Length: 149
Image (cartoon, rainbow, N blue to C red):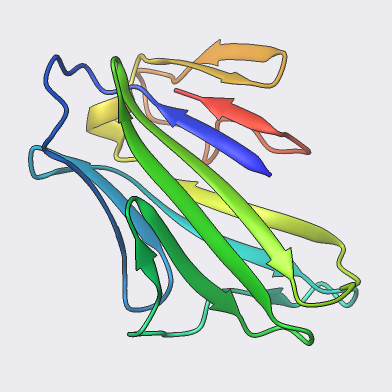
């Protein structure tokens, strides 16, 4: 499971929303401002990226959102998004219907630069700050179990 904590400066967090988009991406917003979007995927043994299929009937249960990856066997992706005292926490669980050979399981995040520039991040035991000056395309890449902004 990959857990992601998105810290938005908010004293009252009831305006926080997490919605699956039509192509399987999860958009997290607060007070109408998009904080982040993400897309879960797997990379097959031949490095083919498999993202969620369009599923207008994706199960919504409380704060949980479910979509399916069209792998063989299928993988159910559950994102649990909840407001916290200091922001938002999103935790993903990917559950294959049977053993599934993959090269990688990926949760790709897109973060609006104007919201996050200068903010601190941690990936497991590694830490840093999002550069104020635009430059590279990513903050961190690699095997991780927790990512915090």
